[in-house]
Image (cartoon, rainbow, N blue to C red):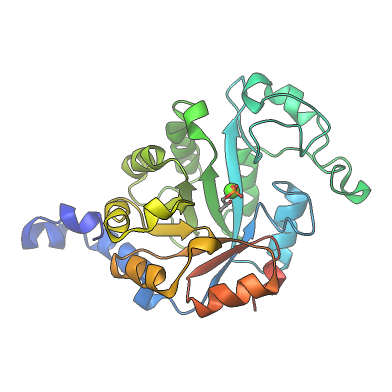
Length: 272
Ligand code: G3P
Ligand code: CA
Protein backbone atom coordinates (compact mmCIF):
# COMPACT_ATOMS: atom_id res chain seq x y z
CA UNK A 1 0.00 0.00 0.00
CA UNK A 2 1.01 3.63 -0.35
CA UNK A 3 4.30 4.55 1.20
CA UNK A 4 3.21 7.69 3.02
CA UNK A 5 0.33 5.97 4.72
CA UNK A 6 2.90 4.00 6.66
CA UNK A 7 4.33 7.25 7.94
CA UNK A 8 1.06 8.36 9.43
CA UNK A 9 1.28 7.22 13.01
CA UNK A 10 -1.93 8.04 14.82
CA UNK A 11 -4.51 10.71 14.32
CA UNK A 12 -2.31 13.61 15.40
CA UNK A 13 0.21 12.87 12.67
CA UNK A 14 -2.59 12.69 10.12
CA UNK A 15 -3.76 16.14 11.18
CA UNK A 16 -0.26 17.54 10.89
CA UNK A 17 0.21 16.63 7.21
CA UNK A 18 -3.00 17.51 5.41
CA UNK A 19 -1.29 19.08 2.40
CA UNK A 20 0.68 15.93 1.68
CA UNK A 21 -2.46 13.85 1.91
CA UNK A 22 -4.30 16.18 -0.45
CA UNK A 23 -1.50 15.92 -2.98
CA UNK A 24 -1.60 12.17 -2.86
CA UNK A 25 -5.40 12.06 -3.04
CA UNK A 26 -5.28 14.01 -6.29
CA UNK A 27 -2.99 11.36 -7.67
CA UNK A 28 -5.07 8.33 -6.74
CA UNK A 29 -6.65 6.41 -9.63
CA UNK A 30 -10.23 7.00 -8.56
CA UNK A 31 -9.72 10.74 -9.13
CA UNK A 32 -8.24 10.22 -12.54
CA UNK A 33 -10.68 10.97 -15.33
CA UNK A 34 -8.60 11.07 -18.44
CA UNK A 35 -5.69 9.31 -20.05
CA UNK A 36 -2.40 11.15 -19.90
CA UNK A 37 -0.68 11.42 -23.24
CA UNK A 38 3.07 11.21 -22.74
CA UNK A 39 5.24 12.20 -25.67
CA UNK A 40 8.08 9.68 -25.52
CA UNK A 41 11.41 11.53 -25.85
CA UNK A 42 9.15 14.31 -27.18
CA UNK A 43 6.99 13.71 -30.24
CA UNK A 44 9.79 11.45 -31.41
CA UNK A 45 7.83 9.82 -34.21
CA UNK A 46 7.98 13.15 -36.03
CA UNK A 47 11.05 14.99 -34.75
CA UNK A 48 14.43 13.84 -33.41
CA UNK A 49 14.10 12.34 -29.93
CA UNK A 50 15.14 14.31 -26.86
CA UNK A 51 15.50 17.60 -28.75
CA UNK A 52 13.74 20.93 -28.35
CA UNK A 53 12.10 20.33 -31.75
CA UNK A 54 10.49 17.12 -30.44
CA UNK A 55 9.46 18.72 -27.14
CA UNK A 56 7.99 21.81 -28.82
CA UNK A 57 6.02 19.57 -31.15
CA UNK A 58 4.65 17.65 -28.16
CA UNK A 59 3.42 20.93 -26.69
CA UNK A 60 1.87 21.85 -30.02
CA UNK A 61 0.16 18.46 -30.17
CA UNK A 62 -1.24 19.07 -26.70
CA UNK A 63 0.40 16.12 -25.02
CA UNK A 64 0.14 16.11 -21.24
CA UNK A 65 3.78 15.24 -20.63
CA UNK A 66 7.10 15.04 -22.39
CA UNK A 67 9.27 12.09 -21.42
CA UNK A 68 12.98 12.83 -21.18
CA UNK A 69 16.12 10.73 -20.56
CA UNK A 70 18.64 12.32 -18.22
CA UNK A 71 22.35 11.44 -18.21
CA UNK A 72 25.55 13.26 -17.18
CA UNK A 73 28.56 14.48 -19.14
CA UNK A 74 32.17 13.96 -18.11
CA UNK A 75 32.24 17.44 -16.58
CA UNK A 76 29.03 17.03 -14.65
CA UNK A 77 26.33 18.62 -16.81
CA UNK A 78 22.95 16.93 -16.86
CA UNK A 79 21.84 16.45 -20.45
CA UNK A 80 19.04 14.70 -22.31
CA UNK A 81 19.91 11.72 -24.46
CA UNK A 82 18.62 8.16 -24.53
CA UNK A 83 21.57 5.93 -25.40
CA UNK A 84 24.68 5.83 -23.22
CA UNK A 85 26.69 6.75 -26.32
CA UNK A 86 26.10 9.66 -28.70
CA UNK A 87 26.56 7.43 -31.75
CA UNK A 88 22.98 6.77 -32.85
CA UNK A 89 21.37 10.18 -32.34
CA UNK A 90 24.19 12.59 -33.17
CA UNK A 91 27.00 12.95 -35.69
CA UNK A 92 29.55 12.16 -32.99
CA UNK A 93 30.87 9.04 -31.31
CA UNK A 94 31.70 8.05 -27.76
CA UNK A 95 30.17 7.48 -24.39
CA UNK A 96 28.10 10.29 -22.88
CA UNK A 97 30.09 10.08 -19.64
CA UNK A 98 33.43 10.35 -21.48
CA UNK A 99 32.55 13.57 -23.32
CA UNK A 100 32.41 17.11 -21.95
CA UNK A 101 29.31 19.25 -22.29
CA UNK A 102 31.12 21.47 -24.80
CA UNK A 103 31.98 18.44 -26.92
CA UNK A 104 28.42 17.16 -26.84
CA UNK A 105 26.81 20.56 -27.38
CA UNK A 106 28.56 21.05 -30.70
CA UNK A 107 27.14 17.79 -32.08
CA UNK A 108 24.22 17.72 -34.50
CA UNK A 109 21.34 15.83 -32.87
CA UNK A 110 18.87 16.28 -35.71
CA UNK A 111 20.37 15.30 -39.06
CA UNK A 112 20.34 11.57 -38.28
CA UNK A 113 16.57 11.76 -38.59
CA UNK A 114 16.11 14.34 -41.31
CA UNK A 115 17.91 17.24 -42.97
CA UNK A 116 15.00 19.35 -41.80
CA UNK A 117 16.31 19.03 -38.25
CA UNK A 118 19.96 19.73 -38.98
CA UNK A 119 21.50 21.73 -36.18
CA UNK A 120 19.30 20.50 -33.32
CA UNK A 121 21.36 20.30 -30.15
CA UNK A 122 21.48 17.89 -27.23
CA UNK A 123 19.55 19.86 -24.61
CA UNK A 124 20.44 20.26 -20.97
CA UNK A 125 18.05 19.17 -18.24
CA UNK A 126 18.02 22.70 -16.87
CA UNK A 127 17.16 24.27 -20.20
CA UNK A 128 14.16 21.98 -20.49
CA UNK A 129 12.95 22.68 -16.95
CA UNK A 130 13.18 26.39 -17.68
CA UNK A 131 11.47 26.19 -21.07
CA UNK A 132 8.61 23.81 -20.26
CA UNK A 133 7.86 24.38 -16.58
CA UNK A 134 4.13 25.04 -16.31
CA UNK A 135 3.59 24.44 -20.06
CA UNK A 136 3.59 20.66 -20.12
CA UNK A 137 4.23 17.89 -17.61
CA UNK A 138 7.70 16.37 -17.47
CA UNK A 139 8.26 12.64 -17.01
CA UNK A 140 11.92 12.49 -16.07
CA UNK A 141 13.68 9.19 -16.63
CA UNK A 142 17.04 8.71 -14.95
CA UNK A 143 18.73 6.67 -17.66
CA UNK A 144 21.31 4.17 -16.39
CA UNK A 145 21.84 6.10 -13.14
CA UNK A 146 24.29 3.42 -11.99
CA UNK A 147 26.76 5.00 -14.43
CA UNK A 148 26.42 8.39 -12.77
CA UNK A 149 26.77 8.12 -8.99
CA UNK A 150 24.95 10.92 -7.19
CA UNK A 151 22.80 11.90 -10.16
CA UNK A 152 19.64 11.60 -8.04
CA UNK A 153 20.84 14.44 -5.79
CA UNK A 154 21.79 16.58 -8.77
CA UNK A 155 18.37 16.12 -10.36
CA UNK A 156 16.72 16.94 -7.02
CA UNK A 157 18.84 20.08 -6.68
CA UNK A 158 17.78 21.39 -10.07
CA UNK A 159 14.13 20.58 -9.46
CA UNK A 160 14.37 22.52 -6.21
CA UNK A 161 16.03 25.45 -7.96
CA UNK A 162 13.01 25.66 -10.26
CA UNK A 163 10.52 25.08 -7.43
CA UNK A 164 9.47 21.84 -9.01
CA UNK A 165 10.22 19.71 -5.98
CA UNK A 166 6.82 20.64 -4.56
CA UNK A 167 4.78 20.93 -7.71
CA UNK A 168 1.39 22.58 -7.56
CA UNK A 169 -0.08 22.83 -11.02
CA UNK A 170 3.10 21.64 -12.70
CA UNK A 171 3.29 17.92 -13.34
CA UNK A 172 6.59 16.22 -12.67
CA UNK A 173 7.36 12.51 -12.25
CA UNK A 174 10.76 10.86 -11.79
CA UNK A 175 11.12 7.29 -13.08
CA UNK A 176 13.78 4.68 -13.81
CA UNK A 177 14.44 1.02 -14.47
CA UNK A 178 16.88 1.24 -11.55
CA UNK A 179 14.76 0.67 -8.45
CA UNK A 180 17.46 1.52 -5.90
CA UNK A 181 17.86 4.85 -7.65
CA UNK A 182 14.12 5.47 -7.34
CA UNK A 183 14.14 4.62 -3.64
CA UNK A 184 16.81 7.27 -3.23
CA UNK A 185 14.91 9.76 -5.39
CA UNK A 186 11.86 9.18 -3.21
CA UNK A 187 13.86 10.11 -0.12
CA UNK A 188 15.28 13.21 -1.78
CA UNK A 189 12.00 14.33 -3.35
CA UNK A 190 9.20 13.22 -1.04
CA UNK A 191 6.60 15.37 -2.81
CA UNK A 192 7.41 14.17 -6.31
CA UNK A 193 5.69 11.06 -7.67
CA UNK A 194 8.14 8.24 -8.38
CA UNK A 195 7.77 5.72 -11.21
CA UNK A 196 9.21 2.26 -11.67
CA UNK A 197 9.83 1.15 -15.24
CA UNK A 198 8.95 -2.51 -15.66
CA UNK A 199 10.20 -4.79 -18.43
CA UNK A 200 10.45 -8.17 -16.70
CA UNK A 201 7.70 -10.65 -15.89
CA UNK A 202 9.32 -11.20 -12.49
CA UNK A 203 8.33 -7.63 -11.60
CA UNK A 204 4.64 -8.22 -12.35
CA UNK A 205 3.81 -10.52 -9.43
CA UNK A 206 1.46 -9.35 -6.70
CA UNK A 207 4.32 -9.41 -4.21
CA UNK A 208 6.55 -7.30 -6.46
CA UNK A 209 3.79 -4.76 -7.07
CA UNK A 210 3.17 -4.42 -3.35
CA UNK A 211 6.87 -3.78 -2.79
CA UNK A 212 7.00 -1.09 -5.46
CA UNK A 213 4.06 0.69 -3.90
CA UNK A 214 6.14 1.33 -0.79
CA UNK A 215 7.95 4.12 -2.65
CA UNK A 216 6.38 4.53 -6.11
CA UNK A 217 3.21 6.23 -7.29
CA UNK A 218 3.59 5.05 -10.90
CA UNK A 219 3.96 1.48 -12.08
CA UNK A 220 5.05 1.83 -15.71
CA UNK A 221 5.25 -1.44 -17.65
CA UNK A 222 6.17 -2.23 -21.21
CA UNK A 223 2.89 -2.71 -23.10
CA UNK A 224 3.76 -6.35 -23.77
CA UNK A 225 3.37 -7.04 -20.05
CA UNK A 226 0.05 -5.23 -19.64
CA UNK A 227 -3.11 -7.11 -18.74
CA UNK A 228 -6.33 -5.82 -17.19
CA UNK A 229 -5.42 -7.74 -14.03
CA UNK A 230 -2.01 -6.11 -13.83
CA UNK A 231 -3.54 -2.65 -14.11
CA UNK A 232 -6.14 -3.49 -11.48
CA UNK A 233 -3.48 -4.79 -9.11
CA UNK A 234 -1.37 -1.64 -9.47
CA UNK A 235 -4.47 0.46 -8.86
CA UNK A 236 -5.34 -1.58 -5.79
CA UNK A 237 -1.88 -0.77 -4.46
CA UNK A 238 -2.51 2.94 -5.01
CA UNK A 239 -0.34 3.37 -8.11
CA UNK A 240 -1.16 4.72 -11.53
CA UNK A 241 -0.06 2.95 -14.68
CA UNK A 242 1.64 4.58 -17.65
CA UNK A 243 2.62 2.09 -20.33
CA UNK A 244 5.23 2.32 -23.09
CA UNK A 245 6.05 2.56 -25.91
CA UNK A 246 3.01 2.78 -28.16
CA UNK A 247 4.16 3.13 -31.75
CA UNK A 248 0.98 1.98 -33.50
CA UNK A 249 -2.70 2.83 -33.29
CA UNK A 250 -3.41 -0.80 -32.39
CA UNK A 251 -1.16 -0.59 -29.35
CA UNK A 252 -2.80 2.66 -28.30
CA UNK A 253 -6.23 1.02 -28.62
CA UNK A 254 -5.09 -1.99 -26.60
CA UNK A 255 -3.81 0.22 -23.79
CA UNK A 256 -7.02 2.24 -23.77
CA UNK A 257 -8.95 -1.00 -23.35
CA UNK A 258 -6.64 -2.05 -20.52
CA UNK A 259 -7.60 1.21 -18.78
CA UNK A 260 -4.10 2.43 -18.14
CA UNK A 261 -3.74 5.97 -16.80
CA UNK A 262 -1.18 7.14 -19.31
CA UNK A 263 0.13 6.13 -22.72
CA UNK A 264 3.77 6.81 -23.47
CA UNK A 265 3.97 7.15 -27.22
CA UNK A 266 6.15 8.46 -30.04
CA UNK A 267 2.92 9.64 -31.70
CA UNK A 268 0.86 11.76 -29.30
CA UNK A 269 -1.76 12.32 -31.99
CA UNK A 270 -2.59 8.59 -32.00
CA UNK A 271 -4.24 9.00 -28.57
CA UNK A 272 -7.58 10.71 -28.82
O1 G3P B 1 9.16 6.07 -20.48
C1 G3P B 1 9.33 4.74 -20.81
C2 G3P B 1 10.43 4.46 -21.76
O2 G3P B 1 11.10 5.62 -22.10
C3 G3P B 1 11.39 3.45 -21.26
O3 G3P B 1 12.20 2.96 -22.26
O4 G3P B 1 14.28 2.76 -23.53
O5 G3P B 1 12.55 4.34 -24.27
O6 G3P B 1 13.89 4.84 -22.25
P1 G3P B 1 13.26 3.78 -23.11
CA1 CA C 1 12.97 6.89 -21.63
